[in-house]
Length: 293
Image (cartoon, rainbow, N blue to C red):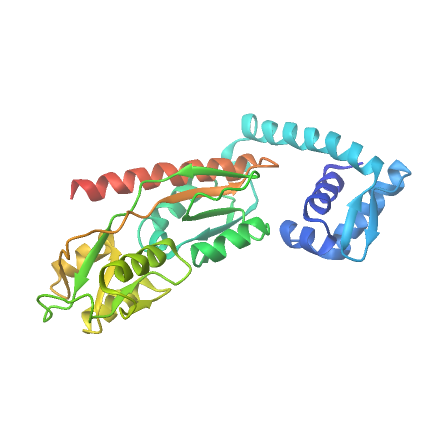
């Protein structure tokens, strides 16, 4: 009986099937099946009942799951307490929202590489909605997104918020929000929902909101005169200084964006937990630098 067999067993038990377990562990389905078969042969008992919708644990499988979770927890503690950082070799599947990608992500990646020089990092930039789904499907290990995620299995580390600001084209001195399109975050985001509700409360259902998945595209839309925008101040400040857009105050401000470093905490993975802590430290440092400007 090996640790790899137990890891495969727990992955199948948690995900309810070999395919999802293989995706989570980043290995082939035959490899997962072979490990489970070898484990069952060693123990002399069936661990899973095969069903049309997936697999479920047998009575013996439930007993083994409890032992396997304890073994994996001890293994992670050993890795965290004993292994040196420069000896850790693994793959970290990182998912980040674009706001993070355009601000402190490079500093975070540099800090990760410094701390874990043998760590391979795979970065996905997507909407917070999609990142949440990928994390819960175990297709990502760590996400930095508009959070928190309220699932019992996830851990959320709070990050400094991002203020949103109003921006207008240079030649539009006094925007009429009942007539001018408002450019903002994608349709599945909290800022979009909040903006639509506020505009409808103030100006009725005829107001126009142009959502976009790309913040850089949103700023370019404002600069080209398409409309005004509610976008991150940390990014808008530079374009204002360059004389490409201008800030303005329509009399109300949207809520700041709340981000978290979120990962699946059960089972616990010390590498992922430490990476999330580094993300928190980098984000705090970045926020302080922006406040000091």
